[in-house]
Length: 143
Image 1 (spheres, rainbow, N blue to C red):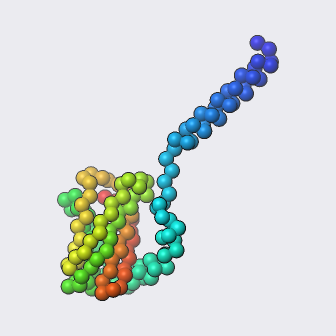
Image 2: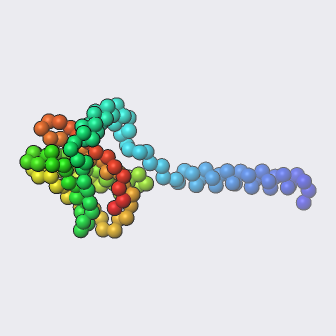
Image 3: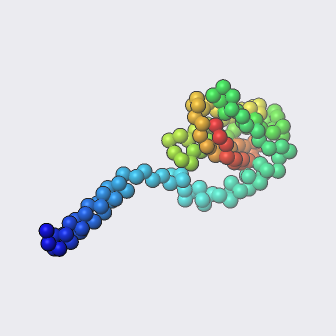
């Protein structure tokens, strides 16, 4: 085998390697943080204001996992008030594992059913409204 064939083999191996990498990268799953990222970014000042109101409560929001339910307990500031809002357990590693639960309650407890033995890292995004005022709470949790 002369040197011309050896160069041809090297070039063909290089091209085959590049084609293999292109094929593998085209099959890679790429998720954005959220599907409507830009809309949320424009409304973020409202979230900042709601977070500040949530932080100024007499006590923080409490949560626990019990019997395949994620239970959220609101502070005593909201006793006897009608609360409506949304609990989102956001899984940063997989959009399909997100848990979204809308609620409307007259007491201070909300129970969100969760899959058994999920054992995942989530971000709790809790937004609610009481007496026409919006509140927001966010924290990292492991379920």
